[in-house]
Length: 292
Image 1 (tube, rainbow, N blue to C red):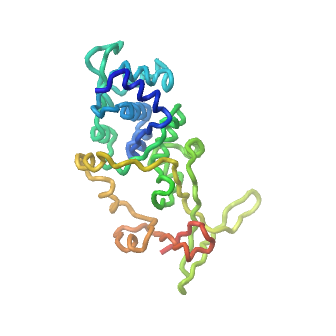
Image 2: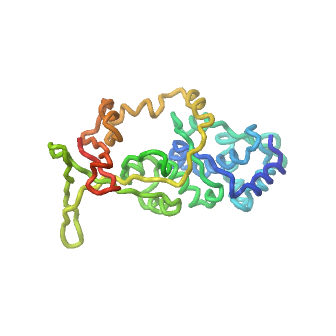
Image 3: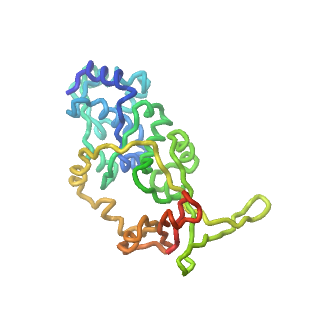
């Protein structure tokens, strides 16, 4: 178990170098359930647990996080709300003097939030995980693919609202706070001769309608870094319910990154789109999708 002095030294000396490990599915579930404050403190407790024992001296946690991250009242309020769910406080009752905090494991938190599968975690600098808005922005950004990791599929703002529980206006604000990249996607059709032509639609303006290329949902990239898988594989084996990956076949798929993925899918959406190869795109560098 990490002592008070070890926790304080670790936090103060490594505050600009330490990383907070985020799990995308837990972030989205916590935002929807309204327990994002408790999850943020759970992430911070895990970052302070340098020994990996899941036990911390509460005095050391208090000295490390108050008042730099939380006010005294806010810290104790969140601590009390998360007790028995995200962590357990034992040994000494209120006012928590000389008490210990035991961090609840990933699998139990996943079951608590109704998460059946965990993907590869992300890492963000501890210096960016500060403030109410900054923390919520990082939790929301955990849903997006990290920049340079893999190709991200288009998704509409309404679909993001369903997935994360964050309103459209808050999504735009969090994208600015977290520095997420937004990439436009456009719809094309096959002309039957091996070529492509854009799908056009009329968009209303202030005084008249404009004929433009049909826009699909945007693709988003976060500034987070890919973290080591750690115990993800073991945790997923502990989750008894069907994982999201296993249930993907029950959800109609609309966007496909390759022809093989399109052929293997047995439950396509009414309008499936295939990502156009870079050499076949009408405008270099633009993300174009062909209606199959």
